[in-house]
Image (cartoon, rainbow, N blue to C red):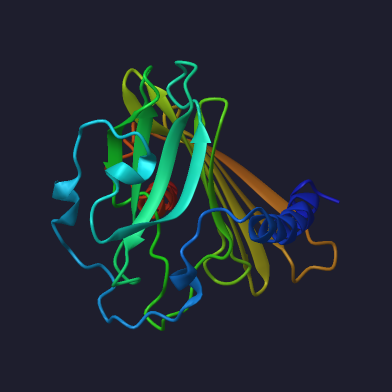
Length: 244
């Protein structure tokens, strides 16, 4: 069978195991995540984050602005200085439909933390307009100097895995991949923006043999910064580039 078929099978197994793992490990997750949202604003614009102090804090929660709660966290050496940094996903306590933020806190030699980067675009919306979660499970990790954002969905939104690294003081998107399963076909995208390398794969599930097609493209090299990047937009831009 073509290589794409076992990838999809492994992905479904990974999805199931990952969901169980998150439930077991008790990753910091606000109980309101599972509560149907009550607000009617999907992308509320506010200035609460201006209250974040750039001063150091002994605990990561010291740098979370008032009115926000920590939904997910991850620990690891992101800037390769041998100190364990923290990535936080935060959201407004009173409006679970508001766009979430991700904070990068670097650890100081005195074991305190300082805010280094923050983004309100790097995460997809948590709920759609009907109030249903778009990806479940979700998780973030820091391993080997790489920040990973992993979003899973066997439904219409598909799976999306983004990777960021520190490069010369910036946190840059280095890799993104997506998987989508639809009626009649399954598709995958593998993209390295800084190298401009894009691979698109599709499998025809209507054919008994389920043939796989793989196409490679060389796109313009792009540098996407953590603070301003929407992986959803990056994927759309890549698809548009090959259809121009």
